[in-house]
Image (cartoon, rainbow, N blue to C red):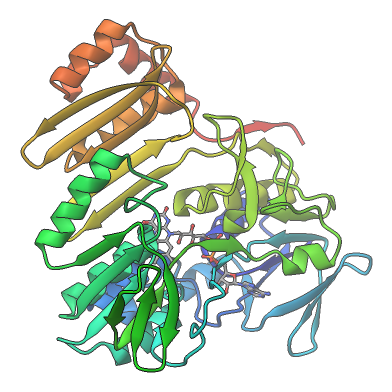
Length: 420
Ligand SMILES: Cc1cc2nc3c(=O)[nH]c(=O)nc-3n(C[C@H](O)[C@H](O)[C@H](O)COP(=O)(O)OP(=O)(O)OC[C@H]3O[C@@H](n4cnc5c(N)ncnc54)[C@H](O)[C@@H]3O)c2cc1C
């Protein structure tokens, strides 16, 4: 069997592990478009901040690929010929496959505003190469503007602050981290960042970047900037899949086995549209643990298993200038909100019909595990339980029922695999 994987990110590494768990002999080729080997994308902001060296960036080492008998091809896929079962590379080489995995990720969204292509000082921060290029542009005391206050934007802003730049974040929504946080929690995080020197402007849009090194806002304010980072969101890389006729919507469409509309082609990671297990709605969930899990399951299925993927849960964990932020669950489900706050710690729980559907925890990493399993398990508790738990949150407030359910999850861990 010939396996080909397009992309060499986290989903690809999961797929190699998945394939090899079922097939020790098939040929595996990974097409590495970035030509950088396997590295951990979230670490690029730490690299920019000077907290990670090049040798600490690896997600999987070259030895991993060697041990798994994988041929890594440093090239880009430019076309999939699904009739001939070939991937055509930029170099002109054709790589044959029996099973193909699209694990080619996403790209930053670039807004169509005047001046966005002004050159060297207007950048994105999405790849290791971006971080290396930005590294050369960072000058302590100079001013930087970050467009967008999502996870990538704020991690970029943090890195620049830590390198001594004067950073302004511009967010067009009325709060920072709009996909992650509630208004109250966003205000707490925003205050924390501003107390540490970051300027944050919300509710304003960048309308133009001019040749005088200024970022213009829709309220006519102009902000000086020697450096601009564009971080307004990402979108799945769909062109390869769409061009060969695979069904796509916001991401590549896959069935519960992570198979595309072509039965020989699978897809995993940031490039796919999957199901938010809480809402049941289709969603593009660009998260590292999900990309690995999807790759693993797709790899197993490519090698003949029948493992189903239930969908993903939004869980984000980030540290920003010393504040630990964890948010999980779906903002779309309305429910009853329970709040707890003590000094630097804040917990917000949202329950619906006695089930936890969302939580936001600031500086409370210790209760993350139990709360995530409460969301995943959708255990139902009486209102009195949530009231009591929110009045004094802690591991010892969780009842026996919770621990029993957790044990069951651990015993049935992972994907549901059927016979071949
Ligand atoms: C700065 C930053 C911080 C992040 N922090 C977090 C975090 O804290 N937690 C979290 O869960 N997630 C985080 N993420 C998101 C996480 O990194 C992604 O969800 C994850 O990397 C997706 O893995 P993937 O394998 O699907 O895609 P990728 O890691 O993007 O890998 C896909 C690869 O395919 C390559 N490719 C594309 N087209 C082609 C082609 N035609 N031919 C060959 N190769 C191609 C791409 O260049 C890329 O190298 C962060 C992302 C960034 C940028």
